[in-house]
Image (tube, rainbow, N blue to C red; front, side, top):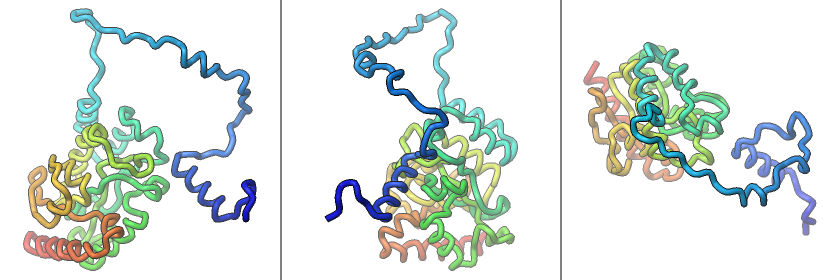
Length: 267
């Protein structure tokens, strides 16, 4: 039996990976910390809470800014992709930014006829700063390669451009909140306008729900052609969902064939 202080490299590696997922990026601080100099937690807990200060009407004090309105103004002011990426990087009202390593903006060919909008970065995406590069991203690449399409293909009719609803990874890959989705929606809409694709692929429940403004499940929405911002749109099952539910890959294949036929018909 292993003693409590003993471990093996498998356990140690698992513990280290967990800390990386939690956002730990350094082993020690640059300077020593004296615990005697830290405030007494008991005193802090007993300190009376500050009362909220009401702002009387007519005082001329501006109310707190609306983060969605600020996002909309920043997005609409972006004249090209570089400006949009800079606007996202400068946007400080989404707390997800504080825990992310990188801003995950986009990948692929900006002149592609097909634009994929996913949900949010995962661990590998956060590390590399690109969307769909982890296990689910590798499956996505294989899926579209089966119909001769890919993010690296220089031919616009066979190319892909890929982004996400959220540019920052949610902690532990949790679902984005409604507030987070609302803040990022103007940026995604402007992104779509700048790329101006012929066809949008809404990859997964969060993407479909955000841009279609619906709570209907992705298993009901998938495969049904619709309209988003005046463009043909096809909701599809997310590759991460397909990895958990392999029998559903037959639906993804049917959707890929439908996309291939629609691209041929709209050439």
